[in-house]
Image 1 (cartoon, rainbow, N blue to C red):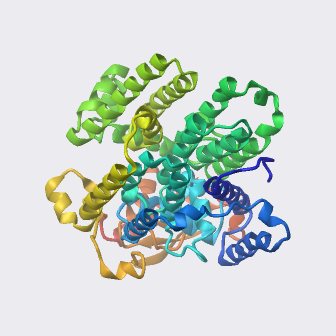
Image 2 (cartoon, rainbow, N blue to C red):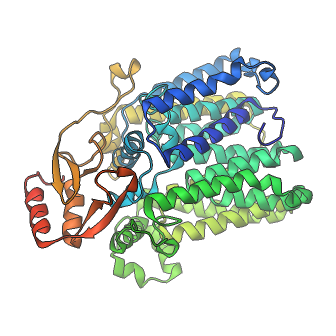
Image 3 (spheres, one colour):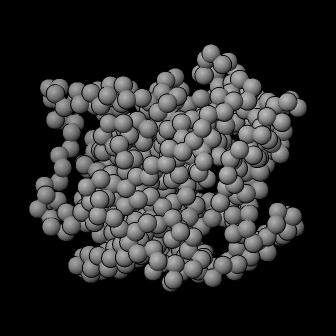
Length: 527
């Protein structure tokens, strides 16, 4: 309604509602914790429209054909089943859960990046998760909902070819990973713009594209492409400033979030810093940049070796240093090149602009972190368009989905098999396999081994485990304490009586440094 467009799609309507919920929870997190009370208020408010007269005019009914589709419900059960497994991505324990925990307890606090630089990049997706995890989603399985919503869209638009993408993300949906949302929602935008476009949809598509960008900025190519596409699809819309008001508001919310968390517009890009009292120590930001470079090459080279490489040497090294990943990266690069030839052969301006924006994305992402998963949101749309004109029977696609699903479920259920087949696949070390009890209750780890310490005016907790996923905030692992000891700094509260004023980084006094070292010695080494 706010966008002033009528929408013929149930799934797009839900995506719009999801986006506005993200806008609302992000705005609230600036001022208050996303506590149980706030979640209950939001839940009640979301139910009110269903009781208003004439609200049915704006609501899109669930597609009746899906209710009768056996295949749809089978696929739903598979997604729910695999989503109930124990999480096994390290980011879940070191980034996703601690972010949600912070937001539940305190909301978005100025200078939270000073506690842990990873928290400086809190995603809007985690803010949404924090607005649901104490009521309707206590096991933090928002990605199961996103995947099923994507499935509804595919059946609704009969875009069955995209079904084969879903099993790939069986490795992610047990967690609150933003990657699931940006990949699936990007494919929705690409399918709508290329194969289901109507002029009156532009506002909706631009809004969702910008929302995907604020979930994870690596998807910057998507709103850029949607904007440029309007030149070829409907130039008049460019002159309508109202089209850009709500997307601009989303971007402003995103930038404010970043400044509050880390005092940078795009964390951890130091060039975008904003001078505030909570600006993190630049050595920590530089360390973040160095780690991104090291991960680009799987830590095969040192930072000095990487800095001396030419661009083409970096590309060559990136493509060749790991056997399995080299194959995946080579497929990615070849696909981009093939699509470039395809788009110009077809003389399709929409495809050509898509290719250009993906190339820009690849170059930008590669310059700060060439982890191939950061490029997948641009890779899958290219593959989809390349194969879209090939008519494949729906039944064959269903069988491919089931086969691929069976393969992934087998691998996740039997981690020893993965370790034997793919010794370099590190995720296998985190897998616990199938557990009967997850059929009733989704898998969730409980550690609760921590103690309380103090330095200066900061009371904090230290986990006895290598990760802090269920340690009350502010929390540290021994590794972070060792880093702060090495740098000679430690976070402090701006006002011990008011946490809303946030944290800043303070140089340690000699006695504080000695106290920190004694604390470090009390805890077992990180494994």
